[in-house]
Image (tube, rainbow, N blue to C red; front, top):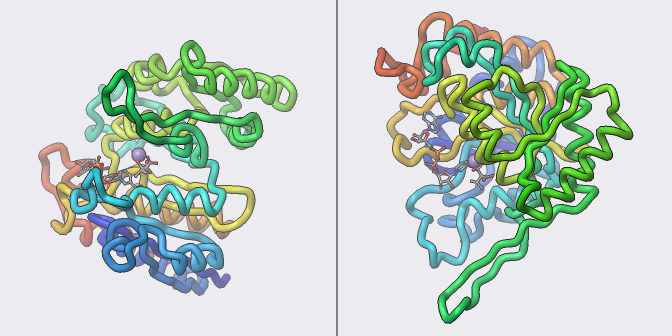
Length: 356
Ligand code: NAD
Ligand code: IPM
Ligand code: MN
């Protein structure tokens, strides 16, 4: 098949890890007889430096015309000035919104080969296989914000808003995914305190009762969920939650398999191109050193093959290749736990070698 892919390397380690994932896609194309064309576009801090805008219109246009998008990461200390007119992160939020990518799938899967990389005991993480559905285009991230004065002091606010259709569509997708897995769905909210969470809980319960009576459904408050993830992660199947809760819980959950550097994500809407990225950021502390773990981005490219191009065999081949290099004992520094480690490039090449 022919496919048009947009690459958004972004900032920090973004270009290093996207390069590795691109090599993997190229080997996949060669082995399976596909033709992938790549267009590299600006986003984030580098886009601010070159155009003044973290999401130039050219980038949006190229993304819209593409079959799928692979993103590295955005942001970094260079653009952290609290008084700056815009930030790299604004570009990422806007591309998600512009493309209607309301569902962010974040799978948390154990790699048997990496049992020693997790800070948790093997008996606790054993069997963990969670698929998070993080709502991505609503909630507090997109609520009204501003500043003012409270009791004579400078103040700022950001409101959290969810509408019924926004909750319905993400819960439906999550419930459908549950039906294809272990048939269990957990909705996470803060309904004991927050009004939008009460609307979320009501709406989710109705969708589940009316449309998915066969799916085993429960609700958990977000603070308790943070604890359960560490205490009994293997008990969860599919988890659906709002934008900010999903952001925080999945960084926490990334420590179950052992590193943020291992976890991919897919951002999907109603048709149109999907956007694939690691869940981690631009890792300014290790940027330019050539030691970042490229596996999250490589696994994101496998999700791209599966969800946007319907190339299931190819996606599975990439995932197997990753497991094989881990089985061979290859570790980047983040998963080496003090043992020997290899560079981004060596890890990427090892995956392409397995695939070729
Ligand atoms: P981060 O995810 O960039 O880094 C957190 C820690 O994890 C760091 O110690 C980093 O070295 C490590 N890490 C992350 N990815 C790794 C990888 N692939 N291999 C090895 N180690 C890895 O989070 P942060 O430091 O809080 O944020 C840095 C910048 O990234 C901020 O500007 C933030 O806004 C941005 N950010 C962007 C995205 C995105 O583009 N999707 C996501 C999260 C954070
Ligand atoms: C992520 C990141 C982003 C988010 C930031 C950089 C806007 O943390 O993709 O998880 O909060 O969504
Ligand atoms: Mn995040």
